[in-house]
Image (cartoon, rainbow, N blue to C red; front, side, top):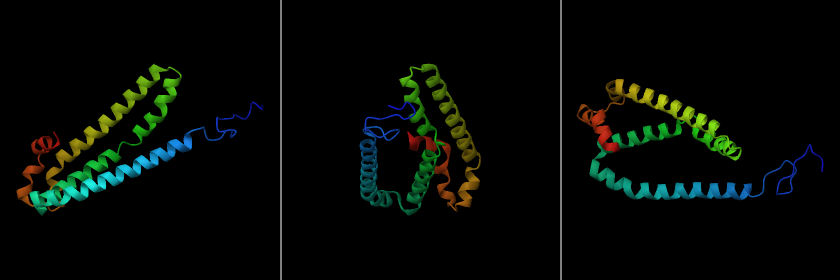
Length: 151
């Protein structure tokens, strides 16, 4: 066998490892299933929440949900990078490098998250007026209410 080419369990020189397409299919299926389940949950709970909260409070809730989804999406690719590199270093038993990666990821996300939270807190009244949120709903948007809502 030529040392310049590597063969995987699938028999493809330098190709896709055995079980890779099965894993991709499984991941795609589970992502689709997650979408279907969440859509069903939202479909069933939104009318109840709209009726319970009223249209203006429901709008604030929806705005908070949208912001939280942007925060989740804003992990800057760190979670994906950790999912790629940690197993590589684990297979080499390089625990020191895993600790470095985990610490760096945590510090970056903590810095970004705290900066975002501080910015929103400092600009909260300006943001609420830009979004034309009625004054009577400004109090629920304060930090104390937000912390109680999240806990």
